[in-house]
Structures are given as C-alpha cells and as structure tokens.
Image (cartoon, rainbow, N blue to C red; front, side, top):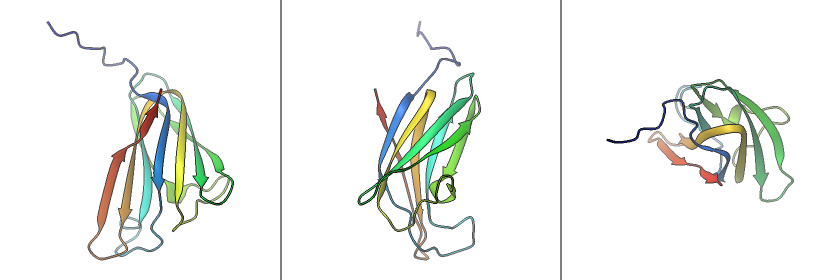
Length: 131
C-alpha cells in the first residue's frame, strides 16, 4: 500500500529566490489583461494563513522592501510585481531579483508576460527553494 501524506500536510519552503526579475517596459493589447508584468505566484496549501515578505534586489542600488503579502490558508495568490507600491513601486525595464520569505511553508513560482510585440511571450518557472 502507498503511504499518501495528509492533504493538509505542509508543503513547500519558507524561503524562496527568484534570480531573474524584469518587468518589460511596454505592452501591446488591452489593459490590464495584456500589460507586461512579472508575477510571483504563491500557493499556501496549509491550514494556516501565511504572511509573506518580498525583498527586491537590484544591480546598482540598495534593495526595496519588504513588501508584505497575506496568503490565506488553502489559497493561491498571484501578485504582479508591477502592482507592488509600498514601500515603493518596482521600476520597469530594470533587472532585479527577489527573496521571498514566509512564516509557514509555501510554494512559489514566477511568471512573466512580455507583450511588447503583438506576438506575446509568456514565461514561467519555479522559484528556488532555500533549505
């Protein structure tokens, strides 16, 4: 017999890294659906709410953040990096990296929509979990 973990067992990690961040500076198509963006996608499969902080690191300046996000229990959050504004907006067309920390294990993925051309590009990758 296969031992299947409980549906409510915590999955994920508490620290994640996205090394390749970049918000395309222009867009083609209807807004907000086709606005070029980077998104951090967070899955909280546990029974407890997660408080998540995002720190943005740049090539040539001090980091921005923390940006604090709440992810309710047994829910997913898709947060556009473009929409982060407190403590400051994340600049577009600038290379950055993210460190994401959560008070409980979560799973993190990155998605980028590049709609600078009419032939759009969508990229997605799992973030790097830190153990």
